[in-house]
Length: 268
Image 1: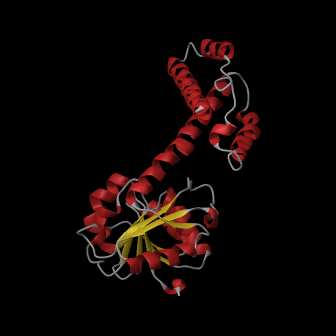
Image 2 (image 1 turned 90 degrees about the vertical axis):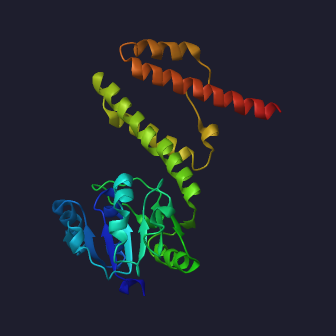
């Protein structure tokens, strides 16, 4: 049974916290949490009933599965240290843009468990609704990883490193860049004495629309209407903020270019 498998989390950041809490809720024990600082390791370990360690020498060697959720550059730098003495176990990382082959030459069993979601320690995620993309270097471990991931999520898919990189890039556009635009909108409203909360119904409906419409079909606003008068009013309002002004203009022109491309395709 998966509940009898021993799991170690290497990392205690946002992704590790989301996965660790999900494992705990499913009754899958995490025996140890490693972080470079004892404070971070302890914060997650106390939530999920695990041992907290911050020294590589104290990292146990007898777990069945090691889930590595470290920053990409740290993961790449420490791969030999992570794998040393753990050749019997399955080692997986959770990165979107790090290839599975980063493990090659360091251990015999390895793979990837990539959750396509944004995580924050302050928010609990229902992992059952999060797509998990898996990859392993053997058919046996692919099957094991699929079975194990299916305990956490209703959506488990196989994806190779190139596909996962494409997913990660699309997520940056759909999530990180969009959230940055929220931050710009928040600052703009605050400077005019208005609350960001006023945008929440609009944000929610925009997200709901793409459940039933393609993003191109859902596009609204002055750019897709080719409403140059309104665009110029907005650009003038941003004259004191040249970076935001350039961003507004670049995004507006990109929307228009994409709309022209769509119209040309329909004509053809």
